[in-house]
Image (tube, rainbow, N blue to C red; front, top):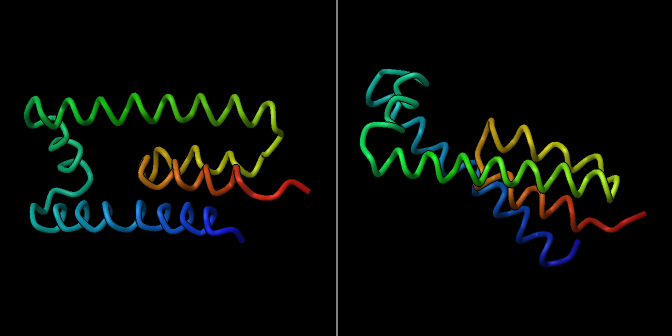
Length: 105
């Protein structure tokens, strides 16, 4: 495995674990669960703007993944789409780049 692919994989793992640490910590401290976390995304204009920013990036990444999978027939790369919406862009973008740069057989 190339150094670049290892970097992408490390970033995908970091992007899954690090943000989730803060989400879980917030939900435990507030005792509100996922609903309370989602409510916090819209608590002020700053967090609302960030939420929309990440939503637009997630949609753009999904369109890009679908377009490239259609051309390259790299069906395994489709796993980055559920990762986008279940984990986050910080995991799914490096995961997609990791899957995209695998050697073609």
